[in-house]
Length: 177
Image 1: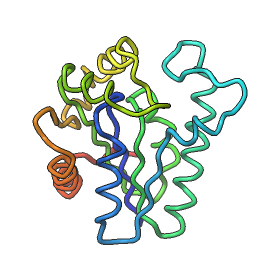
Image 2 (image 1 turned 45 degrees about the horizontal axis):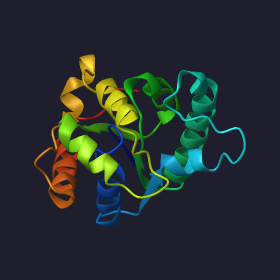
Image 3 (image 1 turned 90 degrees about the horizontal axis):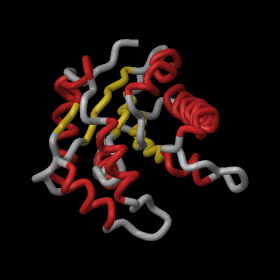
């Protein structure tokens, strides 16, 4: 049975950096799937995924991500998926999970830290303060999944990766499928 970790949070929360650390230091064969690459693959007709008119595009991209994760998982790989996977996108992952053991971890630094990190990112990355603020707000209240959030405001990437590993190992961050 493969382990799938959905590592999420708003832009600037450290998902990609932490996912890279978690996947690289894994004890079993592990793949790091960065959802941004699926969006970057759209060369014509791309719609920023945080805009309301991107709903259909986002559904297609999520389906493509799930298909890739499924191929790796069926091949015996654990998979660390990093991307903006809010509770609103969990149902398709749950439906596809089958024999995956799937954990859901939300990195949630405070807004000031998120903005600072997000705006310091390189070219081609989302650095718009309004968009980052909106995405941060989308993860502010996870309802019944609130216990899946980790406040990473005061943690560096290595400390955050250690917290994520501990969270997954606890079993407390598993999603029912």
